[in-house]
Amino acid sequence: MSGERDAGVEREERWPIGRSIVERIRSSVNDPMGPFVTGDDEADVFSTLYITERDGCVPESLLEDELLNSIHAMYYAVLDGLRDELRERTRTRDSLWILVDPSYEDTTAFALITDELVLCTGWRKAWHFYWPSEDEMAEELQGWYEAAAGRLQA
Image (tube, rainbow, N blue to C red):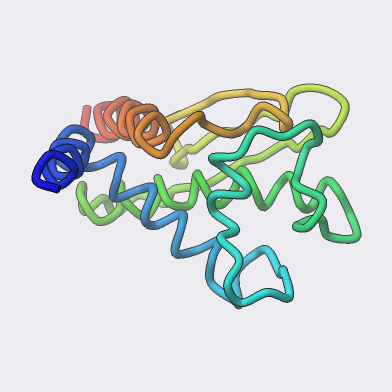
């Protein structure tokens, strides 16, 4: 039991900012009033969206009437978690804008910007926008955060 607890503590200490962003995203997408409606209050939308390999762009149980809206919401929630973390930790007064150009046929592009700076950009096919584990998600998101914070504070 002690080994499991130690591994959990190590995981939290390893990517603290990334883990905080992951928790923001989890809270947002699992909220019954969040961007994805499942009809099942117990559903773990976060894991279904971001930690589960899939064949399609968005898990069928989470699709809206318009696929592009679902893809947009899936990416937006991640960038919104990053944006909130940047606002809280850097205390920036700059406007932080999220741009998502969703595609179900090819690559979805995304960016986090201010009025004058590009903080974070990326692109990934929607059906590949997930991580093998929460730890790997936290690691990558912490990298995004550090790059964006560095640009914001430069």
